[in-house]
Amino acid sequence: MKHLRLLFLLIPIFILPFDGQGHTYDIPDNSVCQGLPDSIVYRQLDDINVYAHKKKKYSSREYNRMVTRIKKVYPFAKEAAHELDLYNEMYQKITTERERRKYVKKVEKELFAKHETDIRRMTITEGKYLLLLIDRETGNSSYELLKEIKGSFSAAFWQGVAKVFKNDLKERYDPLYRDWEMENIVEQIEAGKL
Image (cartoon, rainbow, N blue to C red; front, top):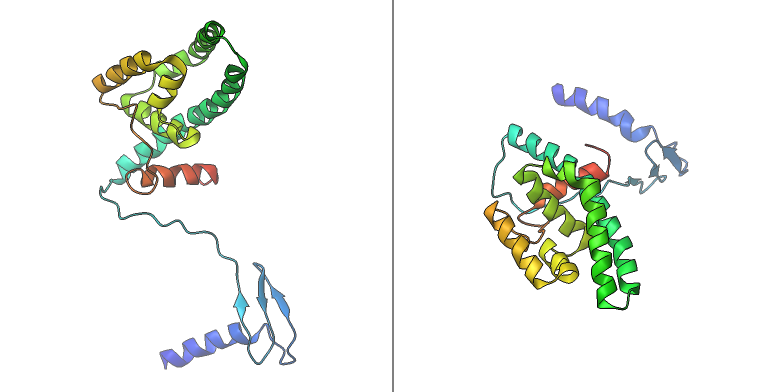
């Protein structure tokens, strides 16, 4: 008896779009049903992201902390990628090495004055997320960027400082395996869901 009730409830769903004349009718959500005898309901679905099996299980508290931290540092990573493009354009136009060094020092002072208080207030974990997100946005690890702009010695020095704080400037962003949860959070931020 329950099955018959369910059947009677479902039948109107399939009958409503058709009048038996083979006409096409529009249904909400951009669905299209084509007339008899072979009618098909077509719906465009949102993309579904599939990630690797998670190796580490986060509690809801840990996950919420991760979301909060990423939401805090993600704008810095976006801004860093944008500013790097602007400064790199000017850097490439400079021909002499002396002028390049002057330009790098000038840019370094500007950035330090602009972001000093925000970066000093970051935790070690937020700094790690920032380094990974800069790699995500620029396509280069922080070590590679430092080495390209400031030289090998400076990059090695800052790599040593990062190691003291249990970070690694050479660490690459891996959205498919190790950093899949971070990638998921960033995609939700970009989509406006977080």
